[in-house]
Image 1 (tube, rainbow, N blue to C red):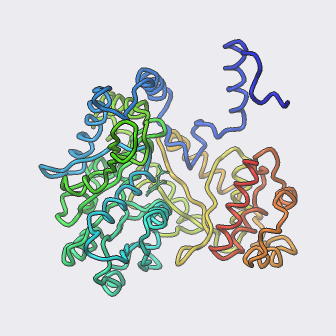
Image 2 (cartoon, protein in one colour):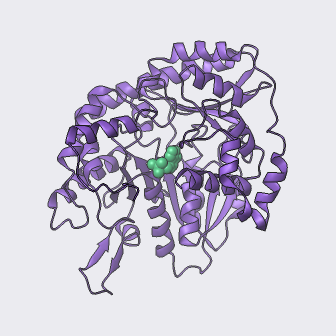
Length: 473
Ligand SMILES: Cc1ncc(COP(=O)(O)O)c(C=O)c1O
């Protein structure tokens, strides 16, 4: 017996210390993480923790048994509908995150248009988040990729127009995109969708709680929300720039019948009657409670202030990258997320050097028109350290070696992986070769990134599955 399931219970303090121990190597919210964190400081973390704990026992599965689940959810949904200029009659649902919001938007479109076509399609700019591909995969919809401009990374509306046909049920735009922080031409895309009587989803998972406040702060933000008539649904994440803990987002619909198509009801079994608004059955309301608390704690005023700080830091960072030799911007961000690349030096070596210096950045592979780059998401925590971060990039750029090739033998391995015999691959040997142990990437992860970057997207997907499967074996 391994003892993985303990025979006897242990003391509370020991158990909690064990959890703390397990978190030793986690990314810290210390103002040096430029991805994942969305950190707005200790004060908000403390408020969230208390609100989360207070809502922990609520089961959103049944709002008649837990009326508080409906009230808490409606508080968050109504605040977001108002913020995003939704008209009278618009509705929404709180979900567990951006991916779930998007999955539900896709499911709702598919069911709403079930009599229009048996082979539904989605017009999807290549910069849209991967969760739309997931939705297409789960719900049997064909993705029709839409080109983006190679300089601005905005969706090419003419390309979308060319690809529109009677099977398209949904057009997608981002406000803004994750990788480059760029807002698609939402008005034009929505007009195209409206012309053809199909849905237009605006993915404002990152921008939903940024763009309205940037506009309040006097920035020139193009129309992107329900103020555009053709926009039928939107997603916006509270657990990103809403500064709530992980596990809360919203999907919003212009009309109730679109949301009816999102719901799932089942009376064909011998247990209790089922009607689920989201993909889950039993569902936690804890993060929703925290989101509602943060919204009311900060108010528009508090968000405006933080959004202003993040945007000022972004402008500073962009200006520094523009002025620095050896690096350049990839697109021009419309909000506080951005991409930059090296012009000659090895980008993965740069990201390794930044990691070694204690900064967390997100190296990102080339795809379509987008080159290999480093992605940065600014939050109030790291915005305060932007000068030190710029100084570190400058330092790390000194004597940066030219682009390095992936390790020898890799191309045979990738070919094997792409072939049908890939099941024979020794995943643990591969992990060992790359220096991955105990589920952690080595501090210098350049070799791993070079390997993945060298592969075409389908092989990258296989590698990623192999990698994560190995971590959890
Ligand atoms: C634009 C956009 N949409 C959707 C998502 C998916 O959100 P989540 O990671 O909360 O599932 C993200 C996540 O980064 C995003 O940036």
